[in-house]
Length: 354
Image 1 (tube, rainbow, N blue to C red):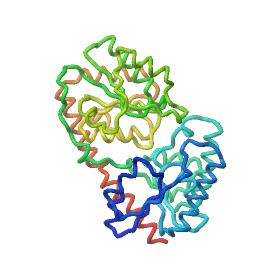
Image 2 (image 1 turned 90 degrees about the vertical axis):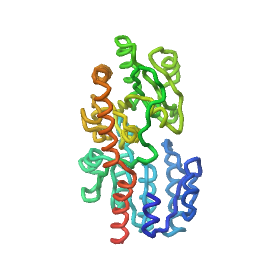
Image 3 (image 1 turned 180 degrees about the vertical axis):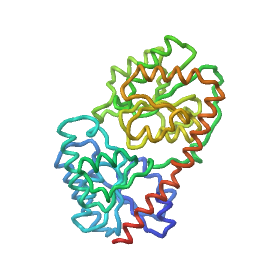
Image 4 (image 1 turned 60 degrees about the vertical axis):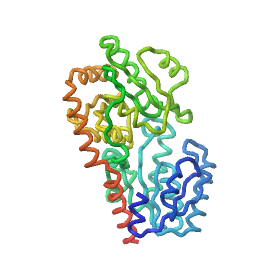
């Protein structure tokens, strides 16, 4: 996205916390970076959120942007409100609805009301799947003409390129990659693995990811300890570069309850790996069923186990063909340059209109 906008002659200021993820500064020394101090993604403290709004308001007043492009829930809400107060054209990118929209309760009600209020100040709201756009329109959280749906945030298909397996064992390997959240379907993955391993021991089930203790859906430590002890599960810990794990897996599994648009599915498909995921927003649109992977109902470990067996019944040639079709789809629909072009067109339209 940065590369695309710079090529179009924009001057860019990134407003974000100073952490390990600002390594893009090495690639783009011409952009400015403003450290953000008050962003706490999991806080429900109104005073903390007010301080975030106030910090963004002061930053926007100082740098005087022509357009602000916001990402993630807190930035979309409080950044949108800050830009609105100053009369600055604003775009929100909804990268996922998260815990408040999956679970009923007070937080869900408050989040919806905040989105409804802040969306009045955005010129456009970009969603990573059509289901989230439809939900916002039907729930009166957004005017229909403001919403735009694209497919995901994009993936670097040259970085995530096909690799041959380096482990020469004959076992078929199914791998879960993601944060260890119950909402990601990790419990269903473990239960289905036990079922299949009891019938077909010539399989392995790998679990790769870290605990996200600040998320209410985080896997409890006692559950993770039990899974680590389980001979049916190989826990690989967490790693930043997952390419070797994807390459040495035969199928990537994400039984999530809901996503914005799953990045790990895009990465796996870009590396020519078939996927198994759920019929839910942010997952189902990634898969051409029975062509690039399989879809199962949300929360159904039994159906997941049956789909594992269905994959095992395929010939190696059929699995390879499915992976090749996954790669083709990733390059056609998910390449980050394609997605950047789509968002840049939105930025251009808002800037010209302003």
